[in-house]
Length: 111
Length: 113
Image 1 (cartoon, one colour):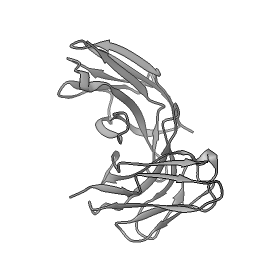
Image 2: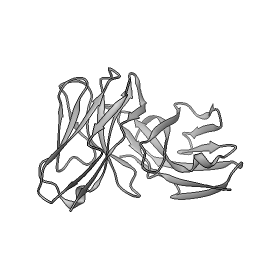
Image 3: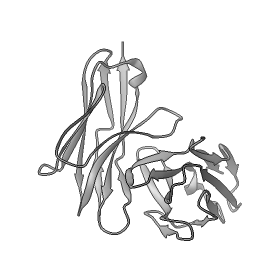
């Protein structure tokens, strides 16, 4: 099976940089995605890492290390609107391509 | 282009009642999914449909049934609601060839008393 672990909460200061970690156990996967979800809203896709290394999308970057079973989402120049929950998700290999989500990290950005 | 739509947005049921959650997508995608989200547990897959006419169980299918009515519509039915089914339900559809990028509907907030 698949399992993903994330810290439940993170607090960071506006304008700073924050890293949200994700460790996983899996029998096989194609890549790691990240989603953002504001309170009361739906998850929205942020980024995807199929290969090891860093992917950059504006203020957000995502990293994957298959050898360490580890990934992270890096948010730079934090803004108040970045306060939300962030989920990592594995795209499973073998059979139909289902996605397994982590339990999420609630990020609070403070002034 | 509305993406993924869901109805209703909110629902309160009594134990034992039945209801159907509706989902539609206008992106011409083949796959559609139903998830439930509970506090501290992330999103868990209930059922999915790889294409019109096919459905398969996900991680937590007990107590639910689904119908893939056509390419656009995928409904989730609770035959006899239980308090344990109190949750937020999301329908999602991934991009063609991009299963890692899922488009979610706005969700249905269901309370079973």
